[in-house]
Image: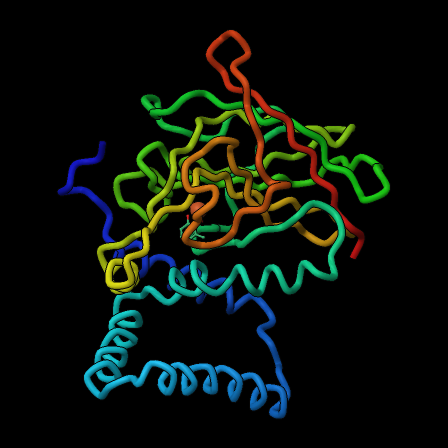
Length: 283
Ligand code: MBD
Ligand code: FE
């Protein structure tokens, strides 16, 4: 286990996540939503707040506590964390209604662009003493008609056995457990890595206070984040989960789907193996 002293803080990972999000947003077209639509959406959100106040007979001390909490979320850089844990799943579910191909899931706050490009069969960069059971995930990237997609990018990132992501925890080397696999002529890949553990979202800041104050828990089931990209196709952002894993049914981020669960088996050499194929629709 990581010693307390070098444990990354929510504020630390939040600051990195905020900085990273702002950099990504600067390179992206954010919404140019017309005024009537902004007004309609914001009115609906505020109506939800007003209804809760009425329904629960909210007091002034509660209102001021809520204000203080919102300020703390901003000051702690926890908006990316909070939005991705408690809101993103609803957006993903909504856009998924008109999508075909492999089921998506939330991106979360810890994607980093421009990681190392690897051949179709390779190991994810990891420390010499990286903890965790070896895991191999192989598969094929195809279009929705079954045609293999050669040269597709399978971008994967996941937490280490202690639940820390490189780039968001000072003691983990940059690029650890992150990489982009480029599929071979048949669209195939094989990723060697280690089995991640269930994951506790940073909970020593205001997001954690809310979870604690509500009697919820801060856990996500063990997961691999994957984004698959191929020219001429809509990228798929998703996550892979593990059969029988803890918190599959109570993910704090509500981001699991039954289609995204794999059940790796020991191949007799101590490596747990599974396959997963990805299907991308044309864009
Ligand atoms: C994570 O690793 C994650 O996947 C999400 C959704 C939120 C916080 C941390
Ligand atoms: Fe994650």
